[in-house]
Every structure is written in C-alpha cells, then in structure tokens.
Image 1 (tube, rainbow, N blue to C red):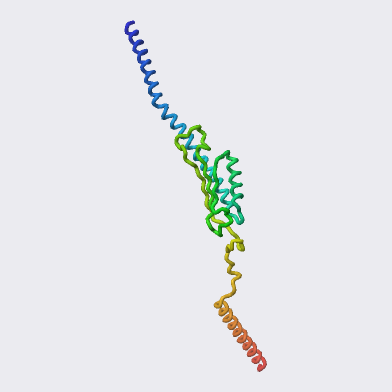
Image 2 (cartoon, helix red, strand yellow; image 1 turned 90 degrees about the vertical axis):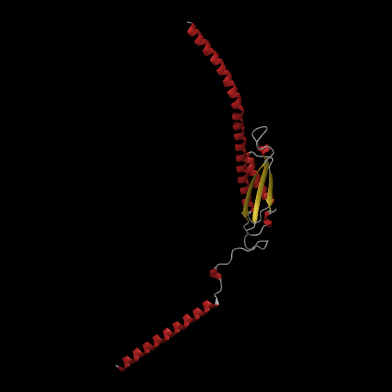
Length: 199
C-alpha cells in the first residue's frame, strides 16, 4: 500500500511540474507563432495589392499608348479597375502628360502608388510600416501616318517602288533578245517556204 501511495504521489507531483513546463513552453512559442501568422497576412496583402496595381497600370498604359489619348482617359480606366478591387488613397502618374505628345514608338509609362497603411488588413502593420506599394507599366506609343505630331507611319511596300535602273536595263536586254529570236524565226519560215517553191 505504501509503495502504491508513494507512486501516486510521485505521479501527481510530476503532472504538476509538467503543467508548469507546458505553460512556460507555450509562453515562449506564442510570440513566434503570432509573428508568423500576422507577418504572413501582412506580406500576403502587400503582394496581392501590388499585383492589382500592376494590372491597373497595364490597362491604363494600353490606353495611353493609343493615338490621341489624354491623361483623363488613362485615369478613368485606372480608377475603374481599382474601384472594383476596393482600393483607395492611391496616386496616378502618367508620362508624358498628356500621352498624345509622345511620338511613334516613344515610351509611355503609367505609375500607381499607394501607402501600405491605406490597404493593410491589420490595424497597425509592423513589417511594412510607412512603405508604399507601386505598380508600373511601360509601353511604346503607336501612331499612324499623317499624325498631328508629324509621325511617320509604316514605310511603303516594295511593290509600289518605282523600277530601278538595273531593272530597266535587264528589261531592255530581255526585249532585245526576244526581238532577235522573232527575227530569226521569221527568217527560218521564209527559208522553208523558198525550199517548197523550188520543189
């Protein structure tokens, strides 16, 4: 009986010590665990917003690269894209402004920036802090021939080019050869008829 009682006392004492150790371990692991969770949420939100900004900048840059586009046209497309995504507090920069000033194949860029604090899910982000997120897109401007800016369109095709001197010479030589062949064939015909007459 004494042995059993001593064993029970030892087990109860060990359980009590184990509970205290578990509390200490939990207190040590909890900060790291929370850090990973909230850090993953904050960084994931930043990556998602950056992707949205890049897509909106690409849509606005497509409009800016067209002929006769204005800054208001670009901002209107960007605003529609970001309103659907539920973003606010952003700024839009178009270069050149207005984009119709760009000549053919000149670079046209649209840049959208927003503070991370405006789009963060957490009330007080710690990793990103006061940093800003940006989406940038650059495309070449496309202008038609006869544009107001004096842009040059596609070069004329080779079919419409006037014949060169070499082509004229080669054509003349071919015509002379064909004439000689015709004259020789006529002579042969005449010779053949004379032979028939002699017979």
